[in-house]
Amino acid sequence: MAFQSEFADNRKLVDCANKDSDHIGERFAPRGPWVVLIKKALNAWAAKQSPAVRQIPVSDLFGADTGDLVALYKSRQTPPLVNFAGKIDRVVGKKTVAALDGELPRRGGVVPPPPPPPPAPSLTMSALAKRDAATSILWARGAISGLTDTRGFIANPSPLAPIPPRLVAVTLEALETHFHISTLSTSRIPFIDKILEIYVKSLGILVGNTAFFIDDTTSAESANGTPAHVPLASGKVNFTPAFRERSGTTGFGPGCRAAMVLHEPVHIADHPAASNGANHINENAAAYARQPALNQLHNAHSYASFAQQVFFNGNDTRFGIGKPEQ
Image (cartoon, rainbow, N blue to C red; front, side, top):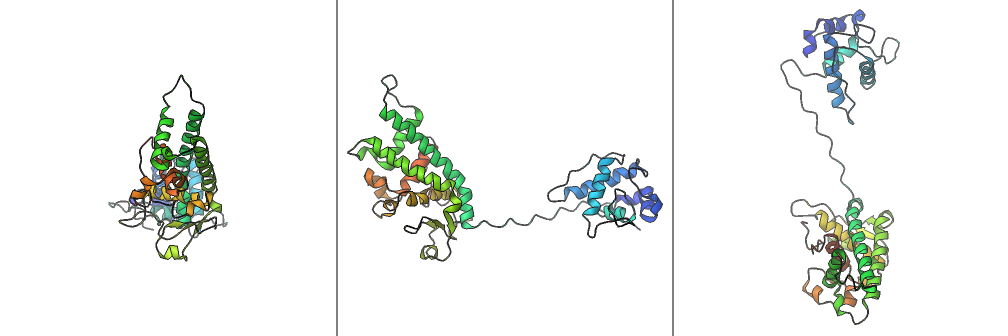
């Protein structure tokens, strides 16, 4: 046969392609420049596999590792390259050397680029939300940590340390920004306890999201383009086709999606108060800053925004549906 690659320049490989007696293996002509070419072809094939197959060092010795790779190569051809007994062996003979020739570029040519991998299947809406929940969980845990330390600082003030630690200072500022704690007429401790209770329940929903996150393509909310919602008393967070990754001017960035994914479980954890329109004021609306603490306590927007401010060390990011690009 006529080789198309640099195999054509090696007399031993030409003989191997034409005579059964000139096969190559661990016990047949195991050392020489022809072995270098065989290994180059095997490694070129190995690099194109998915997942990639381990390549072997290029030398002029046909050792056990070469035999192993030859056997694997022969087993993966269509049809497999078997010997006269119908078995896969570790020897390079007529059929194998002809196939290996095709793994190398034509003489004077270049190695063609491998075909691009097939596109990954797009995630469903709820699957995307489950992925984003990893960020939401970090924010919720940060909020719980800050609230726990702050509660302890308020409940057990130390005359020796009147200045709050950084996390407590950040949490107190965020409590004022998003829960307007200064408008309380009662003790701050029960108020913080209630916020903690809602966060802990919401965190449980985020961690166990498989039982709570579902796809929704048929509801009126879906038809209206609402990306996520909790139907009243359903106990489920519905994600619609509008809940998707940002592309151009549509969809939502990762920070925005993580805020939504933290926001929605609050409607389950604090049902029915969190679904009351008097409480549910967007964090970017002018009325948000005027809400009294007892309304903000039941505002799901407050929980998403507060958690971000604590997590980001005092930076009031307010990622959410009002910042779709973030």
